[in-house]
Amino acid sequence: MIRSFASRFYKDRTASAAAEMALMLPVLFALIFTTYEGGHYMWSEHKVLKGVRDGARYAARLPFTNYDCTDTDLVGADAATRVTEIKNLTRTGAISGGASKVPGWADDDITVTVQCNATYTTGLYSGISGGAPTVTVATVVEYPSILGLLGFDTSGAVVRGQANAAVTGL
Image 1 (cartoon, helix red, strand yellow):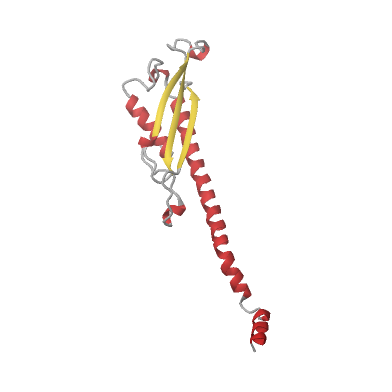
Image 2 (spheres, rainbow, N blue to C red):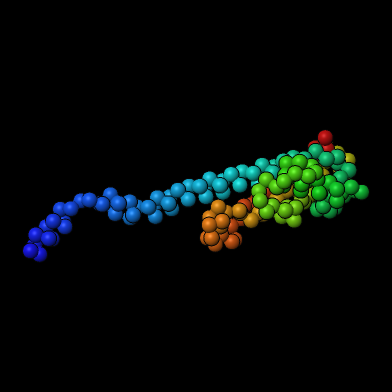
């Protein structure tokens, strides 16, 4: 009797697909969420990199009077306003107002620095003390993870971006 029960049990294939699905479902969910998370990270990184490039490009087109190679910051009466405009353009895509391209991205996350190359003192850069100024816009943004919304610990995940542009004073 035990033998006949065992042989019927081994031959019974009903619900085998359900068992296989139960075994594979965690793997499928992991694959799906990893794909979404990877795509979301790349999209966030793209927005950050585009933002710092736009900010550096805008800063490079400010007049030469905003730059002094004796300091690593912008100079002049409206220097604080210009730095605020650069940071806002980097973060939102607009000189004033607008919403952040990446949730949680603040102006405090963005740094604007000026460096000068003393070997370039002719042509466009003649008359500029210290040589050719270059603007660097850099940022470190906390990554707004999709998996973080589901309760996973994603603290410490960041998106970094940096861009340089030579000042042309246009």
